[in-house]
Length: 483
Figure 1 (cartoon, rainbow, N blue to C red):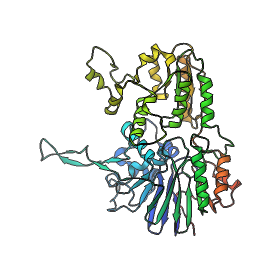
Figure 2: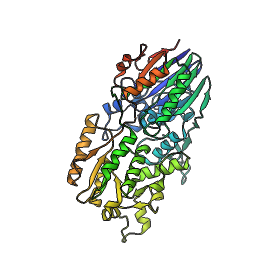
Figure 3: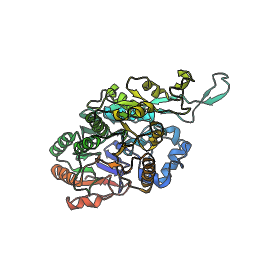
Figure 4: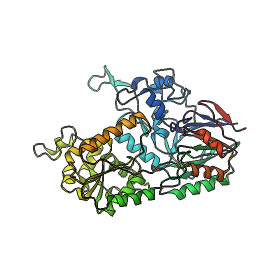
């Protein structure tokens, strides 16, 4: 018997946790963070209790209460942990946190399956981000070891790490009773895939997050044709933009950028999603069009390096951009009163790898030659404009989604205050969604022609009823059987 249980992404955008069972095989497709549910309880100033993650998250409904799924070091604070895993794998569609962010809580002896691009992004996030990001390795918590100075005393063991088992998905991957066919698709982050899962009761299609209007729209088209050929019983389809009739495409956006960056007398400052490499490509091309160089932050540059090291193809390269080196901590970068080794202590180990590159630039470099640069600056980096001091005639281009909640609206108001202070308001808004339009979703499902449709990752699941007769809507934790 084949059963599907949604443990997230029901009536909300994100938080995908899809359990598919067939015989003795149990596999999760994605294991993401629900931003909506998280935001109901936490803020940047009210964070969870790290020592009691799993217990608190189970009570709040952020994690499903399942045995044999979670890492023992945290689960033991709640209950006895299973000696053996009771799940056969976690298959990730892509590395956005609403699909992969809660991987940190999964036991390391449950294998993870994903694309090389997905793994590279998670690796870069793990190494550069603050907060609890343990994807490729987990650091064992609450572990003691004998002191090196006095073996009769115990101290906290902060260095114990376990490598998680990662498997790079092939075009066809066999996991126990499942045969999974993996197809790269167009989305706003590297390494995104859609899947066709062969089960004992027919094929299941899982779209992950998908669009058709980006730089790799033909890959999504190819997936749809392949999915159709399997005559699937069920499609589990995202529906983020199910009410949007059409989509403004990535190449449309790039062309719009070309017109915006022409003949700007001052600095061009921009914001776009940190791991959207297609958007970065659009800004690289726009910068070239204006005879400038795109300047990105240290995290973005480091991510480019990790993607390159892992052999991820068709990505911008670290040599195509300039790297912004901000002043940090003591603020003594290039201060002759301090030795270089003291200056470098202001930076993390991975940041030090980038500082001496020939394409690194500082605020002084940008301030002296503003017409040479397109400076990427997100909400948390606006304070660096004090050092750059944009001259009259500078502009700001905002290429991120419009606010969808009160917190985002407040952040935008604060950003506008900064832009007004530096004379760069009103800003230009140019954005392209990472998700398919309602028209494209309808066309995709009608082409694939499954028996059942299960909408996820949408606040408007009822919209699917307008173009399919068998739409399955189940609550969290409720099983749906194909038989």
